[in-house]
Amino acid sequence: MQSGSYIDGKWFQPKSERVVKNINPADTKDVIAEFPMATAADTERAIDAARRAFAGWKKTPGPERGRVLWRAADIARQRVDEIARLMTREEGKIFREARGEVMKGISLIEYYAGAGFRMGGKTLPSEVRDTFTYTIRQPVGVVALISPWNFPWAIPVWKSAPALIAGNAVVFKPASLTPATAAVLAEIYEEAGLPPGVFNLVIGSGSEVGEVMVSSPHIPIISFTGSNEIGSALHIKAASRGAKVTCEMGGKNAVIVMADADLEKAAVAIRDGAFGSTGQRCTATSRVIAAESVKAELVERLAAFAKGIKVGSGLDESVDMGPAVDEGQFNTNLEYIEIAKSEGAKLVSGGGRPAGLPDGYFVEPTIFDDVKPEMRIFQEEVFGPVLSVATAKNLEEALKVANSVEFGLTTSIFTQDINHIMKFIDEVETGMVHINEPTIGGEAQLPFGGVKSTGVGDREMSEEGLHFFTELKTVFINYSGESGRAMIR
Ligand code: NAP
Ligand code: MG
Image (cartoon, rainbow, N blue to C red; front, side, top):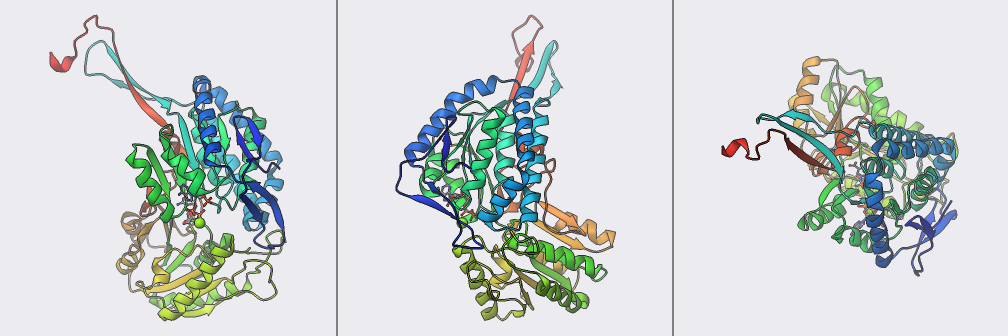
Protein backbone atom coordinates (compact mmCIF):
# COMPACT_ATOMS: atom_id res chain seq x y z
CA MET A 1 0.00 0.00 0.00
CA GLN A 2 1.19 3.49 -0.89
CA SER A 3 1.40 6.09 1.86
CA GLY A 4 1.65 9.32 -0.08
CA SER A 5 -0.32 11.43 -2.49
CA TYR A 6 -0.75 10.62 -6.18
CA ILE A 7 -0.38 13.57 -8.52
CA ASP A 8 0.06 13.61 -12.30
CA GLY A 9 0.47 9.84 -12.41
CA LYS A 10 3.22 9.76 -9.78
CA TRP A 11 3.24 8.73 -6.14
CA PHE A 12 5.11 11.15 -3.96
CA GLN A 13 5.74 11.95 -0.31
CA PRO A 14 4.95 15.62 0.39
CA LYS A 15 7.82 17.32 2.19
CA SER A 16 5.81 18.64 5.09
CA GLU A 17 6.30 18.37 8.81
CA ARG A 18 2.69 17.47 9.41
CA VAL A 19 1.67 13.84 9.07
CA VAL A 20 -1.62 12.00 9.26
CA LYS A 21 -1.12 9.21 11.75
CA ASN A 22 -3.46 6.50 10.57
CA ILE A 23 -4.59 4.66 13.70
CA ASN A 24 -6.75 1.59 14.26
CA PRO A 25 -9.65 2.84 16.43
CA ALA A 26 -10.17 -0.66 17.85
CA ASP A 27 -6.56 -0.74 19.07
CA THR A 28 -4.86 2.63 19.24
CA LYS A 29 -1.44 0.98 19.59
CA ASP A 30 -1.83 -0.29 16.00
CA VAL A 31 -0.52 2.41 13.63
CA ILE A 32 -1.30 1.47 10.03
CA ALA A 33 0.86 4.09 8.36
CA GLU A 34 1.93 7.70 8.51
CA PHE A 35 0.92 9.88 5.60
CA PRO A 36 2.81 13.14 5.16
CA MET A 37 0.25 15.90 4.58
CA ALA A 38 0.15 17.60 1.21
CA THR A 39 0.32 21.40 1.14
CA ALA A 40 -1.54 24.13 -0.70
CA ALA A 41 1.24 24.13 -3.32
CA ASP A 42 0.85 20.36 -3.86
CA THR A 43 -2.88 20.90 -4.33
CA GLU A 44 -2.26 23.59 -6.96
CA ARG A 45 0.07 21.18 -8.72
CA ALA A 46 -2.67 18.51 -8.71
CA ILE A 47 -5.16 21.00 -10.16
CA ASP A 48 -2.69 21.96 -12.92
CA ALA A 49 -2.03 18.30 -13.73
CA ALA A 50 -5.76 17.65 -13.93
CA ARG A 51 -6.26 20.65 -16.24
CA ARG A 52 -3.61 19.34 -18.63
CA ALA A 53 -4.95 15.77 -18.54
CA PHE A 54 -8.54 16.86 -19.10
CA ALA A 55 -8.06 17.72 -22.77
CA GLY A 56 -7.04 14.17 -23.70
CA TRP A 57 -9.49 12.38 -21.42
CA LYS A 58 -12.39 14.47 -22.74
CA LYS A 59 -11.58 13.30 -26.28
CA THR A 60 -11.32 9.64 -25.27
CA PRO A 61 -14.51 7.89 -26.48
CA GLY A 62 -16.98 6.99 -23.71
CA PRO A 63 -16.77 3.22 -24.32
CA GLU A 64 -12.98 3.41 -24.01
CA ARG A 65 -13.25 5.32 -20.75
CA GLY A 66 -15.70 2.64 -19.68
CA ARG A 67 -13.15 -0.10 -20.38
CA VAL A 68 -10.70 1.54 -17.97
CA LEU A 69 -13.40 1.45 -15.30
CA TRP A 70 -14.17 -2.21 -16.11
CA ARG A 71 -10.53 -3.03 -15.53
CA ALA A 72 -10.64 -1.12 -12.23
CA ALA A 73 -13.65 -3.20 -11.16
CA ASP A 74 -11.81 -6.41 -12.08
CA ILE A 75 -8.69 -5.39 -10.15
CA ALA A 76 -10.78 -4.39 -7.12
CA ARG A 77 -12.56 -7.74 -7.24
CA GLN A 78 -9.22 -9.50 -6.87
CA ARG A 79 -8.42 -7.37 -3.82
CA VAL A 80 -11.77 -7.46 -1.98
CA ASP A 81 -10.63 -9.08 1.26
CA GLU A 82 -7.42 -7.07 1.41
CA ILE A 83 -9.27 -3.75 0.94
CA ALA A 84 -11.93 -4.77 3.47
CA ARG A 85 -9.33 -5.71 6.08
CA LEU A 86 -7.50 -2.41 5.59
CA MET A 87 -10.78 -0.52 5.91
CA THR A 88 -11.65 -2.37 9.11
CA ARG A 89 -8.26 -1.45 10.51
CA GLU A 90 -8.41 2.23 9.68
CA GLU A 91 -12.14 2.97 10.12
CA GLY A 92 -13.24 0.29 12.58
CA LYS A 93 -16.35 -1.17 10.91
CA ILE A 94 -16.52 -4.95 11.14
CA PHE A 95 -14.93 -6.98 8.34
CA ARG A 96 -18.30 -8.27 7.06
CA GLU A 97 -19.57 -4.71 6.60
CA ALA A 98 -16.29 -3.56 5.08
CA ARG A 99 -16.48 -6.41 2.59
CA GLY A 100 -20.06 -5.45 1.74
CA GLU A 101 -18.91 -1.89 1.15
CA VAL A 102 -16.11 -3.01 -1.19
CA MET A 103 -18.61 -5.08 -3.19
CA LYS A 104 -21.04 -2.15 -3.33
CA GLY A 105 -18.25 0.02 -4.70
CA ILE A 106 -17.44 -2.56 -7.37
CA SER A 107 -21.11 -2.55 -8.48
CA LEU A 108 -20.94 1.22 -8.74
CA ILE A 109 -17.80 1.07 -10.89
CA GLU A 110 -19.46 -1.51 -13.15
CA TYR A 111 -22.66 0.51 -13.41
CA TYR A 112 -20.75 3.62 -14.49
CA ALA A 113 -18.40 1.65 -16.78
CA GLY A 114 -21.50 0.61 -18.75
CA ALA A 115 -22.69 4.20 -18.82
CA GLY A 116 -19.71 4.95 -21.10
CA PHE A 117 -21.71 3.30 -23.88
CA ARG A 118 -24.87 5.27 -23.17
CA MET A 119 -23.69 8.84 -22.62
CA GLY A 120 -26.21 10.46 -24.87
CA GLY A 121 -28.55 13.38 -25.02
CA LYS A 122 -32.01 13.62 -26.51
CA THR A 123 -33.28 14.23 -30.00
CA LEU A 124 -36.32 16.52 -29.89
CA PRO A 125 -38.48 17.96 -32.67
CA SER A 126 -37.85 21.58 -33.61
CA GLU A 127 -40.67 24.09 -34.12
CA VAL A 128 -38.87 25.23 -37.24
CA ARG A 129 -38.97 23.41 -40.55
CA ASP A 130 -35.81 21.75 -41.76
CA THR A 131 -34.11 22.13 -38.43
CA PHE A 132 -32.63 19.28 -36.40
CA THR A 133 -32.42 19.84 -32.66
CA TYR A 134 -30.82 17.66 -30.03
CA THR A 135 -28.75 17.75 -26.85
CA ILE A 136 -25.37 16.33 -25.93
CA ARG A 137 -23.75 15.90 -22.53
CA GLN A 138 -20.17 17.06 -22.18
CA PRO A 139 -17.64 16.85 -19.37
CA VAL A 140 -17.12 20.04 -17.38
CA GLY A 141 -13.39 20.05 -16.59
CA VAL A 142 -11.56 19.52 -13.31
CA VAL A 143 -13.85 18.35 -10.52
CA ALA A 144 -13.13 18.39 -6.78
CA LEU A 145 -14.23 15.42 -4.70
CA ILE A 146 -14.19 15.73 -0.90
CA SER A 147 -15.27 12.73 1.15
CA PRO A 148 -15.90 11.71 4.77
CA TRP A 149 -14.36 8.78 6.67
CA ASN A 150 -17.44 6.65 7.29
CA PHE A 151 -17.60 5.01 3.83
CA PRO A 152 -13.95 5.40 2.84
CA TRP A 153 -14.31 3.22 -0.27
CA ALA A 154 -17.93 3.49 -1.48
CA ILE A 155 -18.24 7.29 -1.35
CA PRO A 156 -14.97 8.01 -3.22
CA VAL A 157 -16.10 5.43 -5.79
CA TRP A 158 -19.60 6.82 -6.21
CA LYS A 159 -18.15 10.26 -6.77
CA SER A 160 -15.13 9.38 -8.93
CA ALA A 161 -16.66 6.76 -11.24
CA PRO A 162 -19.39 9.05 -12.68
CA ALA A 163 -16.97 12.01 -12.79
CA LEU A 164 -14.45 9.97 -14.79
CA ILE A 165 -16.87 8.24 -17.14
CA ALA A 166 -18.32 11.64 -18.02
CA GLY A 167 -14.81 12.69 -19.14
CA ASN A 168 -13.75 14.95 -16.29
CA ALA A 169 -10.38 15.02 -14.52
CA VAL A 170 -10.48 14.56 -10.76
CA VAL A 171 -8.76 16.06 -7.74
CA PHE A 172 -9.78 13.95 -4.74
CA LYS A 173 -9.27 14.75 -1.06
CA PRO A 174 -10.32 11.96 1.31
CA ALA A 175 -11.00 12.42 5.02
CA SER A 176 -7.78 12.62 7.01
CA LEU A 177 -8.93 9.68 9.14
CA THR A 178 -9.05 7.27 6.18
CA PRO A 179 -6.20 7.92 3.75
CA ALA A 180 -5.19 4.27 3.28
CA THR A 181 -8.41 3.08 1.62
CA ALA A 182 -8.26 6.18 -0.60
CA ALA A 183 -4.70 5.31 -1.62
CA VAL A 184 -5.84 1.84 -2.69
CA LEU A 185 -8.48 3.38 -4.96
CA ALA A 186 -5.79 5.51 -6.63
CA GLU A 187 -3.56 2.43 -7.05
CA ILE A 188 -6.42 0.59 -8.72
CA TYR A 189 -7.22 3.43 -11.13
CA GLU A 190 -3.50 3.66 -11.97
CA GLU A 191 -3.24 -0.07 -12.66
CA ALA A 192 -6.46 0.03 -14.70
CA GLY A 193 -4.75 2.46 -17.07
CA LEU A 194 -6.12 5.91 -16.32
CA PRO A 195 -3.78 8.38 -18.03
CA PRO A 196 -1.55 10.45 -15.68
CA GLY A 197 -3.30 13.49 -14.21
CA VAL A 198 -6.84 12.25 -14.82
CA PHE A 199 -7.21 11.12 -11.20
CA ASN A 200 -5.21 12.88 -8.50
CA LEU A 201 -5.26 12.00 -4.82
CA VAL A 202 -4.23 14.73 -2.40
CA ILE A 203 -3.96 13.67 1.22
CA GLY A 204 -4.00 16.65 3.51
CA SER A 205 -6.13 18.74 5.82
CA GLY A 206 -9.52 20.18 5.02
CA SER A 207 -8.37 23.62 6.08
CA GLU A 208 -5.41 23.63 3.67
CA VAL A 209 -5.98 21.21 0.77
CA GLY A 210 -9.79 21.43 0.95
CA GLU A 211 -9.80 25.22 1.02
CA VAL A 212 -7.57 25.45 -2.07
CA MET A 213 -9.88 23.08 -3.97
CA VAL A 214 -13.03 24.97 -2.96
CA SER A 215 -11.57 28.35 -3.90
CA SER A 216 -9.79 27.39 -7.12
CA PRO A 217 -11.13 29.24 -10.18
CA HIS A 218 -10.10 26.20 -12.22
CA ILE A 219 -12.60 23.87 -10.52
CA PRO A 220 -16.16 24.38 -11.78
CA ILE A 221 -17.70 21.43 -9.86
CA ILE A 222 -17.41 20.29 -6.25
CA SER A 223 -18.91 17.13 -4.81
CA PHE A 224 -18.82 17.02 -1.01
CA THR A 225 -20.08 14.53 1.56
CA GLY A 226 -19.63 15.21 5.24
CA SER A 227 -20.94 17.29 8.10
CA ASN A 228 -23.35 20.23 7.87
CA GLU A 229 -20.85 22.46 9.59
CA ILE A 230 -18.20 22.03 6.88
CA GLY A 231 -20.62 21.48 3.98
CA SER A 232 -22.72 24.62 4.50
CA ALA A 233 -19.67 26.89 4.63
CA LEU A 234 -18.16 25.14 1.60
CA HIS A 235 -21.42 25.55 -0.34
CA ILE A 236 -21.56 29.30 0.26
CA LYS A 237 -17.92 29.78 -0.68
CA ALA A 238 -18.13 27.69 -3.85
CA ALA A 239 -21.48 29.11 -4.97
CA SER A 240 -20.19 32.67 -4.52
CA ARG A 241 -17.70 32.05 -7.32
CA GLY A 242 -20.32 30.31 -9.48
CA ALA A 243 -19.21 26.69 -8.99
CA LYS A 244 -21.76 23.90 -9.15
CA VAL A 245 -21.98 22.05 -5.84
CA THR A 246 -23.53 18.97 -4.36
CA CYS A 247 -23.32 18.50 -0.60
CA GLU A 248 -24.63 15.38 1.11
CA MET A 249 -24.65 16.00 4.83
CA GLY A 250 -26.16 14.87 8.13
CA GLY A 251 -29.13 12.69 8.93
CA LYS A 252 -31.46 11.91 11.85
CA ASN A 253 -33.36 9.01 10.39
CA ALA A 254 -36.51 7.57 11.91
CA VAL A 255 -38.38 4.28 11.81
CA ILE A 256 -42.14 4.58 12.38
CA VAL A 257 -43.65 1.42 13.89
CA MET A 258 -47.44 1.25 13.54
CA ALA A 259 -49.72 -0.82 15.79
CA ASP A 260 -50.18 -3.52 13.13
CA ALA A 261 -46.43 -3.96 12.46
CA ASP A 262 -44.60 -7.28 12.68
CA LEU A 263 -42.62 -6.32 15.80
CA GLU A 264 -39.90 -8.93 15.42
CA LYS A 265 -39.10 -7.77 11.86
CA ALA A 266 -39.27 -4.13 12.92
CA ALA A 267 -36.87 -4.80 15.81
CA VAL A 268 -34.35 -6.56 13.54
CA ALA A 269 -34.44 -3.66 11.06
CA ILE A 270 -34.03 -1.07 13.83
CA ARG A 271 -31.13 -3.02 15.38
CA ASP A 272 -29.33 -3.22 12.03
CA GLY A 273 -30.03 0.42 11.23
CA ALA A 274 -29.05 1.78 14.64
CA PHE A 275 -26.03 -0.32 15.54
CA GLY A 276 -24.71 -1.51 12.17
CA SER A 277 -21.43 0.28 11.35
CA THR A 278 -21.52 1.54 14.97
CA GLY A 279 -24.28 3.98 13.99
CA GLN A 280 -21.74 5.81 11.81
CA ARG A 281 -23.84 5.84 8.67
CA CYS A 282 -25.54 8.92 7.33
CA THR A 283 -28.57 6.61 6.87
CA ALA A 284 -28.33 5.12 10.39
CA THR A 285 -31.55 4.77 12.37
CA SER A 286 -31.34 7.10 15.33
CA ARG A 287 -35.04 7.57 16.11
CA VAL A 288 -37.97 5.23 16.58
CA ILE A 289 -41.53 6.55 16.64
CA ALA A 290 -43.78 3.76 17.87
CA ALA A 291 -47.52 3.43 18.34
CA GLU A 292 -48.36 3.57 22.05
CA SER A 293 -49.90 0.08 22.05
CA VAL A 294 -46.71 -1.64 20.84
CA LYS A 295 -43.93 0.55 22.22
CA ALA A 296 -43.24 -1.36 25.44
CA GLU A 297 -42.93 -4.69 23.67
CA LEU A 298 -40.79 -3.20 20.91
CA VAL A 299 -38.40 -1.58 23.42
CA GLU A 300 -38.10 -4.89 25.25
CA ARG A 301 -37.09 -6.66 22.03
CA LEU A 302 -34.65 -3.88 21.10
CA ALA A 303 -33.02 -3.93 24.53
CA ALA A 304 -32.57 -7.70 24.30
CA PHE A 305 -30.97 -7.32 20.86
CA ALA A 306 -28.69 -4.51 22.05
CA LYS A 307 -27.48 -6.58 24.99
CA GLY A 308 -26.67 -9.46 22.61
CA ILE A 309 -24.43 -7.35 20.37
CA LYS A 310 -20.78 -8.31 20.78
CA VAL A 311 -18.57 -5.21 20.69
CA GLY A 312 -14.88 -5.40 19.79
CA SER A 313 -12.35 -5.32 16.97
CA GLY A 314 -13.98 -5.77 13.58
CA LEU A 315 -11.12 -8.06 12.57
CA ASP A 316 -12.55 -10.69 14.96
CA GLU A 317 -15.29 -12.34 12.92
CA SER A 318 -17.42 -13.11 15.99
CA VAL A 319 -17.78 -9.37 16.73
CA ASP A 320 -20.99 -7.55 15.72
CA MET A 321 -20.03 -3.92 16.30
CA GLY A 322 -16.73 -2.05 16.13
CA PRO A 323 -15.53 1.18 17.77
CA ALA A 324 -16.21 4.87 17.18
CA VAL A 325 -13.83 6.12 14.51
CA ASP A 326 -11.68 8.32 16.76
CA GLU A 327 -11.45 9.99 20.12
CA GLY A 328 -13.52 12.97 18.98
CA GLN A 329 -16.46 10.82 17.88
CA PHE A 330 -16.10 8.64 20.99
CA ASN A 331 -16.37 11.73 23.21
CA THR A 332 -19.33 13.04 21.19
CA ASN A 333 -21.19 9.77 21.75
CA LEU A 334 -20.59 9.85 25.51
CA GLU A 335 -21.54 13.54 25.68
CA TYR A 336 -24.84 12.90 23.91
CA ILE A 337 -25.58 10.03 26.30
CA GLU A 338 -25.13 12.48 29.21
CA ILE A 339 -27.27 15.09 27.45
CA ALA A 340 -30.09 12.55 26.97
CA LYS A 341 -29.96 11.55 30.63
CA SER A 342 -30.02 15.18 31.78
CA GLU A 343 -33.00 15.86 29.48
CA GLY A 344 -34.94 13.13 31.28
CA ALA A 345 -34.79 10.33 28.69
CA LYS A 346 -34.88 6.85 30.20
CA LEU A 347 -31.75 4.73 29.61
CA VAL A 348 -32.81 1.15 28.90
CA SER A 349 -29.59 -0.33 27.51
CA GLY A 350 -25.89 0.50 27.26
CA GLY A 351 -24.84 4.04 28.12
CA GLY A 352 -21.09 3.74 28.51
CA ARG A 353 -17.86 1.95 27.58
CA PRO A 354 -18.02 -1.83 27.43
CA ALA A 355 -15.82 -3.64 29.93
CA GLY A 356 -12.52 -5.25 28.93
CA LEU A 357 -11.76 -3.13 25.85
CA PRO A 358 -9.40 -0.43 27.11
CA ASP A 359 -7.41 0.14 23.90
CA GLY A 360 -10.18 1.24 21.54
CA TYR A 361 -12.89 3.87 21.22
CA PHE A 362 -15.73 1.52 22.10
CA VAL A 363 -19.21 2.58 23.21
CA GLU A 364 -22.05 0.20 24.11
CA PRO A 365 -25.12 -0.02 21.90
CA THR A 366 -27.35 2.45 23.72
CA ILE A 367 -31.14 2.88 23.82
CA PHE A 368 -33.18 5.68 25.36
CA ASP A 369 -36.93 5.34 25.93
CA ASP A 370 -39.47 8.05 26.79
CA VAL A 371 -37.73 10.51 24.51
CA LYS A 372 -39.66 13.70 23.72
CA PRO A 373 -39.41 15.13 20.20
CA GLU A 374 -38.05 18.44 21.43
CA MET A 375 -35.06 16.87 23.24
CA ARG A 376 -31.62 17.42 21.71
CA ILE A 377 -31.03 13.65 21.61
CA PHE A 378 -34.04 13.43 19.27
CA GLN A 379 -33.11 16.42 17.08
CA GLU A 380 -29.31 16.38 16.62
CA GLU A 381 -27.09 13.97 14.72
CA VAL A 382 -24.95 11.91 17.12
CA PHE A 383 -23.29 9.64 14.53
CA GLY A 384 -22.88 6.82 17.03
CA PRO A 385 -24.73 3.73 18.35
CA VAL A 386 -27.38 5.71 20.26
CA LEU A 387 -31.09 5.15 19.60
CA SER A 388 -34.01 7.25 20.88
CA VAL A 389 -37.57 5.92 21.18
CA ALA A 390 -40.64 8.16 21.23
CA THR A 391 -44.36 7.47 20.79
CA ALA A 392 -47.13 8.76 18.58
CA LYS A 393 -50.92 8.34 18.80
CA ASN A 394 -51.51 7.87 15.08
CA LEU A 395 -49.86 8.24 11.67
CA GLU A 396 -50.51 12.01 11.52
CA GLU A 397 -48.67 12.51 14.77
CA ALA A 398 -45.89 10.09 13.78
CA LEU A 399 -45.32 12.03 10.55
CA LYS A 400 -45.30 15.34 12.39
CA VAL A 401 -42.69 14.01 14.83
CA ALA A 402 -40.64 12.38 12.05
CA ASN A 403 -40.65 15.65 10.08
CA SER A 404 -39.81 17.81 13.11
CA VAL A 405 -36.03 17.60 12.56
CA GLU A 406 -33.88 19.76 10.30
CA PHE A 407 -32.52 16.74 8.39
CA GLY A 408 -34.20 14.76 5.61
CA LEU A 409 -32.20 11.78 4.39
CA THR A 410 -34.22 8.60 4.91
CA THR A 411 -37.21 7.22 6.86
CA SER A 412 -38.82 3.82 7.21
CA ILE A 413 -42.28 2.61 8.24
CA PHE A 414 -43.40 -0.79 9.50
CA THR A 415 -47.08 -1.48 8.79
CA GLN A 416 -49.27 -3.72 6.63
CA ASP A 417 -51.82 -0.98 5.94
CA ILE A 418 -51.57 0.25 2.36
CA ASN A 419 -53.36 3.49 3.18
CA HIS A 420 -50.77 4.27 5.83
CA ILE A 421 -47.95 3.32 3.47
CA MET A 422 -49.16 5.61 0.68
CA LYS A 423 -49.80 8.56 3.00
CA PHE A 424 -46.34 8.04 4.54
CA ILE A 425 -44.67 8.07 1.11
CA ASP A 426 -46.53 11.27 0.19
CA GLU A 427 -45.86 13.21 3.34
CA VAL A 428 -42.57 12.23 4.90
CA GLU A 429 -39.85 14.83 4.29
CA THR A 430 -36.83 12.72 3.28
CA GLY A 431 -35.07 11.99 -0.01
CA MET A 432 -35.44 8.22 0.45
CA VAL A 433 -38.21 6.15 2.07
CA HIS A 434 -38.29 2.47 3.00
CA ILE A 435 -41.33 0.30 3.66
CA ASN A 436 -40.90 -2.65 6.05
CA GLU A 437 -37.09 -2.56 5.90
CA PRO A 438 -34.23 -0.66 7.58
CA THR A 439 -33.42 3.00 6.86
CA ILE A 440 -30.03 2.01 5.46
CA GLY A 441 -28.90 0.99 1.99
CA GLY A 442 -28.42 2.32 -1.49
CA GLU A 443 -27.98 0.84 -4.95
CA ALA A 444 -25.83 2.00 -7.86
CA GLN A 445 -28.78 2.58 -10.20
CA LEU A 446 -31.00 4.36 -7.64
CA PRO A 447 -30.69 8.05 -6.73
CA PHE A 448 -29.20 8.62 -3.28
CA GLY A 449 -29.51 11.74 -1.14
CA GLY A 450 -31.63 13.91 1.07
CA VAL A 451 -33.72 17.06 1.42
CA LYS A 452 -33.85 19.95 3.93
CA SER A 453 -30.50 20.46 5.70
CA THR A 454 -29.22 17.08 4.54
CA GLY A 455 -28.67 17.85 0.89
CA VAL A 456 -27.83 20.61 -1.55
CA GLY A 457 -27.66 19.95 -5.28
CA ASP A 458 -28.30 16.84 -7.33
CA ARG A 459 -28.75 13.29 -6.03
CA GLU A 460 -25.74 10.98 -6.17
CA MET A 461 -25.35 7.51 -7.75
CA SER A 462 -27.69 6.57 -10.65
CA GLU A 463 -28.13 8.64 -13.81
CA GLU A 464 -28.66 11.75 -11.68
CA GLY A 465 -25.20 11.34 -10.19
CA LEU A 466 -23.73 11.10 -13.69
CA HIS A 467 -25.63 14.11 -15.02
CA PHE A 468 -24.26 16.26 -12.20
CA PHE A 469 -20.78 15.85 -13.69
CA THR A 470 -21.83 16.98 -17.18
CA GLU A 471 -22.96 20.12 -18.94
CA LEU A 472 -25.84 19.87 -21.34
CA LYS A 473 -25.38 21.46 -24.78
CA THR A 474 -28.37 22.16 -27.02
CA VAL A 475 -27.67 21.91 -30.75
CA PHE A 476 -29.70 23.54 -33.58
CA ILE A 477 -28.82 22.42 -37.11
CA ASN A 478 -30.69 24.37 -39.75
CA TYR A 479 -30.71 22.76 -43.20
CA SER A 480 -33.45 24.92 -44.71
CA GLY A 481 -31.07 27.15 -46.63
CA GLU A 482 -32.45 30.19 -44.73
CA SER A 483 -30.53 31.67 -41.84
CA GLY A 484 -33.41 33.52 -40.07
CA ARG A 485 -35.05 32.03 -36.93
CA ALA A 486 -38.79 31.27 -36.91
CA MET A 487 -39.55 33.32 -33.80
CA ILE A 488 -38.66 36.62 -35.42
CA ARG A 489 -40.18 35.92 -38.80
P1 NAP B 1 -16.48 16.42 7.93
O1 NAP B 1 -15.75 16.65 9.18
O2 NAP B 1 -17.43 17.46 7.45
O3 NAP B 1 -15.37 16.16 6.79
C1 NAP B 1 -15.72 15.82 5.48
C2 NAP B 1 -14.59 16.16 4.54
O4 NAP B 1 -14.45 17.59 4.44
C3 NAP B 1 -13.23 15.64 5.00
O5 NAP B 1 -12.51 15.19 3.88
C4 NAP B 1 -12.61 16.87 5.62
O6 NAP B 1 -11.21 16.83 5.66
C5 NAP B 1 -13.08 17.93 4.64
N1 NAP B 1 -12.95 19.30 5.15
C6 NAP B 1 -12.83 19.73 6.42
N2 NAP B 1 -12.71 21.08 6.44
C7 NAP B 1 -12.78 21.51 5.16
C8 NAP B 1 -12.71 22.79 4.54
N3 NAP B 1 -12.58 23.91 5.25
N4 NAP B 1 -12.80 22.85 3.20
C9 NAP B 1 -12.95 21.74 2.46
N5 NAP B 1 -13.02 20.50 2.98
C10 NAP B 1 -12.93 20.38 4.32
O7 NAP B 1 -17.30 15.06 7.97
P2 NAP B 1 -16.80 13.67 8.56
O8 NAP B 1 -16.62 13.84 10.03
O9 NAP B 1 -15.67 13.16 7.76
O10 NAP B 1 -18.06 12.71 8.23
C11 NAP B 1 -19.19 12.60 9.05
C12 NAP B 1 -20.37 13.38 8.47
O11 NAP B 1 -20.62 12.97 7.13
C13 NAP B 1 -21.67 13.12 9.21
O12 NAP B 1 -22.32 14.35 9.46
C14 NAP B 1 -22.49 12.28 8.22
O13 NAP B 1 -23.88 12.38 8.35
C15 NAP B 1 -22.03 12.81 6.91
N6 NAP B 1 -22.30 11.85 5.83
C16 NAP B 1 -23.33 12.11 4.95
C17 NAP B 1 -23.64 11.23 3.91
C18 NAP B 1 -24.77 11.52 2.96
O14 NAP B 1 -24.78 10.96 1.87
N7 NAP B 1 -25.75 12.36 3.32
C19 NAP B 1 -22.87 10.08 3.75
C20 NAP B 1 -21.83 9.83 4.65
C21 NAP B 1 -21.54 10.73 5.68
P3 NAP B 1 -10.42 16.40 7.00
O15 NAP B 1 -10.80 14.99 7.27
O16 NAP B 1 -9.01 16.57 6.62
O17 NAP B 1 -10.88 17.33 8.08
MG1 MG C 1 -15.47 15.37 11.26
